[in-house]
Length: 167
Image 1 (tube, rainbow, N blue to C red):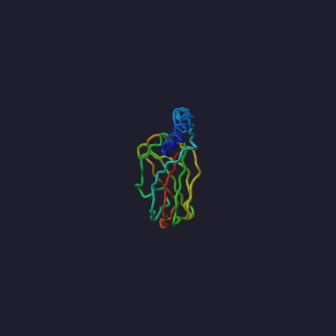
Image 2 (image 1 turned 90 degrees about the vertical axis):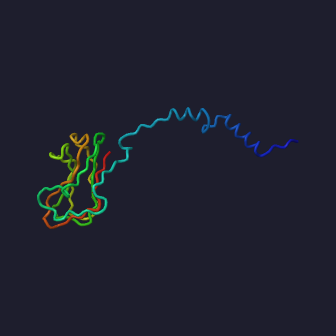
Image 3 (image 1 turned 90 degrees about the horizontal axis):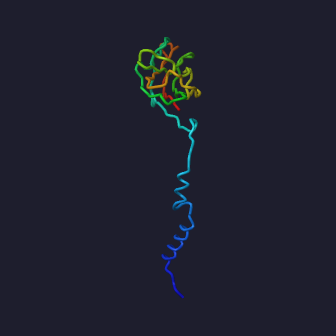
């Protein structure tokens, strides 16, 4: 009777498995891989996030008249491939009962247009707008800022997060 070593037995079994066209090895695996496809839709895409405030930023003495938030908090962002937008914030200290804020976009930082819905900042907490279609004029490389109104010149809304989500 002949004895076979354990190593020879392992190699023999591996060869038999490979010869049987194991789907995880050899040509059949590559053929299956070549035929795989996936049709991504916009709902499959993880939203991008533009963060304006990520820690703490207080709007000292928010005025009644429509004013730019913090007077220079602007970012430039390419919205060419964006279809939907929502935005929101986390507010530690609320503004007045009628205080509101909203995002705007511009081509040249002179003429501004509303980018998304206005949200009230009259109570502390986390608030997000619903997803809405990006305005047609907002497509392209744009400047973005926030504007607000209806403060009383004394209240100090305290933001802990302010961002825009895009997809």
